[in-house]
Image (tube, rainbow, N blue to C red; front, side, top):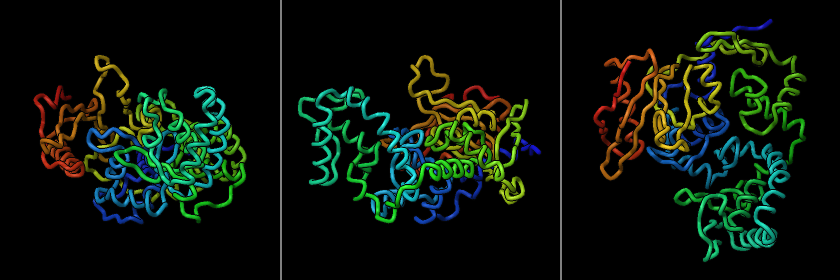
Length: 399
């Protein structure tokens, strides 16, 4: 039997799994923050701070009592979170570190020879020198090992020691002990993560089982490809084989899209949908999401569920941009209602609101604009500014 999931229910299931169904003003302490990151699975990191950096925006959109110092302590003091890669650089619960050991092995096999050819004959010498420097001297930043005559540039122009640091981080021998102005501080992994997170390695089968099971749990329902893409730890074929071998635990579902059409086949755990009966209705307020929010990370899934086509235009030449360099998605209840271009002007102490685009069929009613302004004031205070400044024509052509 195939269970049909109506679109509204599908959106709410996914939002609940992504931490967007509880009241965002509820009090959250440091253990609560760790629980939230665990629920999400990971929080993507990005350096752009047009308003605030992505990881802070992601957490703030779910709980507006979030405190940055709690995240810093969990990362840099307690060792209960660590930085590494999912589909991109992310904050991850350290309890999952043992599963990342399988990623380290895969990355070592993929990038070792490639980076050796890239860096040339000095590769081995620079790597050994870099590693011993950290063993004997402790934590280090890449700029502390940069040759005086080396010209900075993008990743393609890394100096050999920077390449070594990144290689050892990608393969698990080094970890990120902290950041200064967003630049990484590298140290030996055993000195960054506490001993209880250095558990024995799990078998390959147990690793695949955990990766697929934990992905499906955080997605609510998913295809093979979506299961594999969530952590970016296993292949789509491994996810398919896992689903085939665990059919007794899964049910077939058909997920209705926001635009109608043929429902999309997917999997869910047995007991679906009975165990989802207590999913709360999402808060009705308007919320600003990060461009890297996990609700939208899988752009195709987001478009199917929310009828919201969102692309980051950072790398699009300015004349070809449809919206802007770094435009924030807007969520109201369980509906994506638009996007907004804004920037924190810290010299002037205001959040500069440049342009609003509402989705087709979304009215710029007085009530909606009041909710939007209330959210913008909350975001402004979080970003360290107090006021709002609306530029001329910020509402554009409204529907």
